[in-house]
Length: 219
Image (tube, rainbow, N blue to C red; front, top):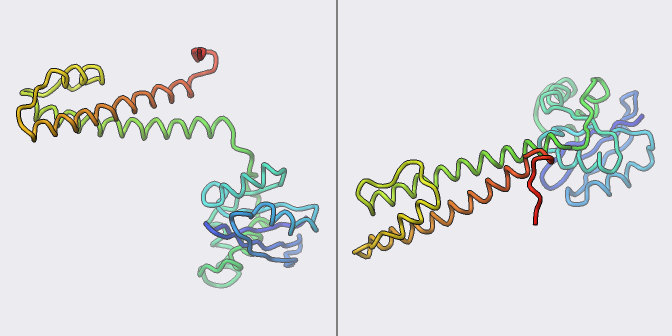
């Protein structure tokens, strides 16, 4: 079995191949843009192989998932474990792409690491949940700015639980007497448009996260 350690970076990846006796069999640096086909062509001489990607749940996530999608065996080497292997091998923790790739492979040979699998429904739900949180935060900020502008246009301002419909009705009744007030109303309408967009995005997000049996059929 050949273990190929990969030190991933934004623009390039460095790979080092070792056999079970920790003997270096080859190394290469490839462009991140064409990494998978280039690496697979380079590694074709070793049919029995596994890939060890540093940070397969972080910086190396894309590369690891691409390799898995192509049917390759991939393990995740945590950055701390790779740093420890580098220190034991060199006596220091200074980063060097080739040394890092060697350390990643060494850590994979010596340790029992998590096998990387294709991302599935759990990742989809997490991404949708993160998106929902971002949308809610943006909606709160937008609503706060809208409240502040309305408070400068109408005595007493608006109720805290302000919907887009209520805000539109309120702005429709305002007749600003000065250029400054007219600008405030225009900015408030812009915020109202943002609020409606965010409400639609949140509704779409809720539909995507709902169980399939509860989703309303699309026309």
